[in-house]
View (tube, one colour):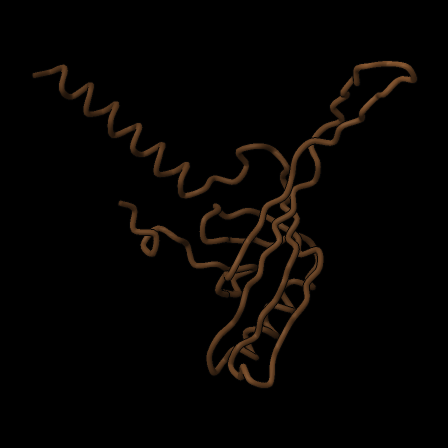
Amino acid sequence: MRNWQKTLRPASYRGVSFFVDYDDLSGGKRLALHEYAGGRSTTVEELGLRTSVFDVTLYHLGDEADARALALQVAMLADGPGFLILPMDGGMLATAENFRRSRGKDRNGYVGFDVSFIPSSNDAGAVLSIGDVTATVAAGIAAAAAQFARFF
């Protein structure tokens, strides 16, 4: 069984690390649906890919949570895209579109954020996940073993 704790990456944006509570990827295709009066079918026209969005709930924890949160705010407000690493997704260039910070009086040492990141590339396969790497390595090992076995 896979040991998830060993395969997840440490999360960061522009080098500012954080913990991820939840992340959600939305994307898809832009479609034009052509419906005609009296018709019984719809013509679907593909208009390209919809802009992908990573919605991430992240947090800082500990004595330096306030300083790290401030550093993350500065990183998210900097011009242009930055390098984003999420635990299960590969690194990618992304722009922080918007964020919301949350703190509570009974949660000292905890600073949370909800952030929307827009990846710089919308191409399928532009982000290489650890699952992709694992599958590729496993397939390569299996192929090498099969070739090696042919010698004996």
